[in-house]
Image 1 (cartoon, rainbow over the protein chains, first blue to last red):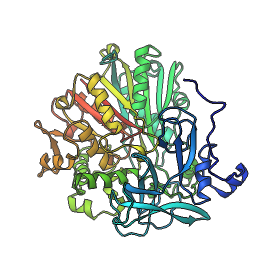
Image 2 (cartoon, helix red, strand yellow; image 1 turned 180 degrees about the horizontal axis):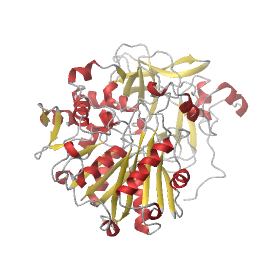
Image 3 (cartoon, rainbow over the protein chains, first blue to last red; image 1 turned 180 degrees about the vertical axis):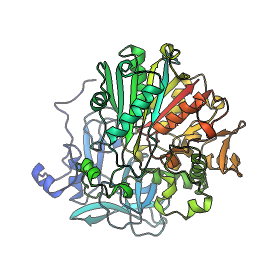
Image 4 (cartoon, rainbow over the protein chains, first blue to last red; image 1 turned 90 degrees about the vertical axis):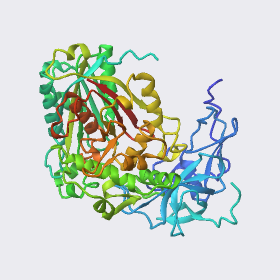
Length: 163
Length: 392
């Protein structure tokens, strides 16, 4: 196998183009690099995206140019459904050191996304008094300091898509 | 299994300042005291130290570099040095490899802890201290666990295995019961279960007594060959095996596949393949407790009990009169120094020091009779799970 550096490139055609300067201005305060910038740039469109490897057909996060499963660079930024379930959760009653306190939510949680077992994203749960592990949730966008952030809220289990 | 370093390297000196929430000392000052204490404890002098292995906390936080340490001690000839992250076993393994390879003869391991004014209210009024943390400005708030990852795993643990906070409470109460007899510990008053449950929640389901306390202080160790150790001042404690493991899913605690596929399980598997001793041979149990949930996980990963059974195991192996755990058929103690929850957060250096002191028979009122071997678990679930097997 040849390591594809020159010709491989993260396929970001799913996202409208934006200059680095504009991204840095609109994503103020977020630590970025030249791969992860696309993940947050998608938030500006209220889209949650992941990496889809066209070679081994697996999803991965965070955004990286090399697929961690097969090392291919045939990686495409693709929209995720925003469906999933609560994998771990906690309620933070005081701010973490070195971080500002965020908006009041029901819990901070790791969401297992519906696309693939083990594909996870850490976020916030809102609109519920009870958060339990395994609870089906769906993405909902909440603007915090001018940035749309992907939060999750419970879905009615009777109407939830099969997982 | 090829493991030539087994029993070839020894811990021959320990030193500690003890741990405090009211110190007005610098990290370098405390680390220097621990280092000098450890070197003198070994019966060595500054000319004997030709290797340095220091620790560092998160990027940007205050640290004592090997360069500062060597200068502070006036070491004239250092032929090996490293500056590894915490917990302490990274530095221990660096020191072992350096001594065993011949890069140097004798390594000083040093680890200082220093309260951040952001983490510790008791440090908040120290204007001099605050200058050390000026580079760590508050970042933008982002959705996510923000340091609550172990609390989030604790919730999953409780829901998946159908247990309440009782096991967490037992880890905390056990530590406080022992710390009464540990003069180095920051918390030396016992707590009862009512006190545990009445304490405020910090990161649900973890409360005040489930999280180790930020402290000031330092630990140091001196490492050399087992052969040289025979001529030194203290009974040698041999490093029988040591391990730090990574899984593929380690960039973030949320990546771990599940509670039964952690780096702690890999450490157990790795140590069992390299060690001739295991938990049935261990005369006490050291299970890292930076958060109480981590200690429950270690009891399970190292096979003291089955998966999801740590809470019931502690309940069944409990001395009600003395409010402390007595594990297994031999009734061995758990964290006899009180653990991080009582001694203060030392990122494992306290757990390692206690193991050495117990194996030397120098633990005073908390001494485990005739302790010969220790299986020691340090670190957490994913990016820093570690273990050591020590023997006399």
